[in-house]
Amino acid sequence: MDMPGNKRSGLLLPNFEDFHTRDIEQARLWGQRVFCDNEIISLQRKDEINAQMYYRKIGGLGVGFMSYGGEITINPSQFDGFYLIQIPLCGSECIVRGSEVTYTSSSVGSVLNAGQQIQLVHGENTEKLILRIERDLLERQAAQYLGHRGPKQVEFDTAMPLDTAVGQRWARTVSWLIDYLGGEDIPNSPLIDAQIEQMMVSLLLASQHSNLSEGRIGDERMVAPAFVRRAEAFIEENAHKPIAVSDIAEHVGVSTSSLYTGFRKYRNSSPMIFLKEVRLQRVREQLLSCNAGQVTVTSVAHQWGFAHLGHFATDYKRRFGESPSETLAR
Image 1 (cartoon, rainbow, N blue to C red):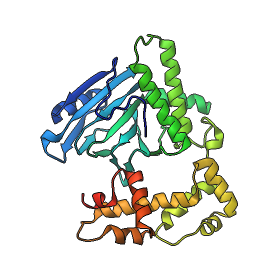
Image 2: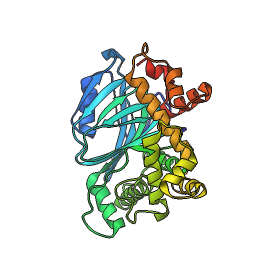
Image 3: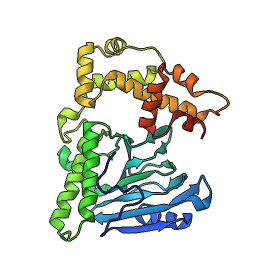
């Protein structure tokens, strides 16, 4: 993903606080200051950590760029007071939330919810944009959209697709905000700050599926009908089987034409693309859970229906930021 201002070796952003250290404890303390108490465990030699962050607050938002250089595991305390949106520019992360495992890359970002316990495995040479949103700001604006006070806690899906039109628009907006705040002569205006807060939170609520997506949030056309959600659940449960579009349509009780239309309109995708993404995820989970001497990439790929290994390897690397063989060698 080509982001304005991304220089890979680090962003030079005047008006942003910044730090750069090879000391894990210093990186932990900075993370504690910006986010919450945390534990950082190096998966490599300690001197291979190369942590850097550029960060700035504006009202109830915090935005910036960060990287740890080496491969590390981060165990934060519970995110009680904020939501954290992460947009990888390169590399990948593994996010564990209970039994749910999400892998991010340049095509898949993440939303870490307030009030949830997670673990992050930050891949080597991973760089990402971050947006921190205060919990009370987000929930207050969600209540305004829903037309009543005191909504239940907002819980977003962890995975945020960035290779869709909606995802790309979101990523560009975060990139624009970083460029704007990094410029010279930024006006000190509470009115502008409030407008930026409202824009970013509104866009998140309208773009990312959550437990409030059935409410009147943003463009109601983006709320997928029940048959699309049932189709996704059917695909998840039967991805190991040789299912066809006709099987999915029959299960949810619509025509194949309606099924394609629903996925195109509400997911900017198709049922078979969704099936391929689920199967790629299952391949990765299996490669990560096995030793290189136990299985081969070819056998696992064939098991999940990928007959053309060249296309499979290309899709896998685009999805996860590394080759299947690199995953198996972990």
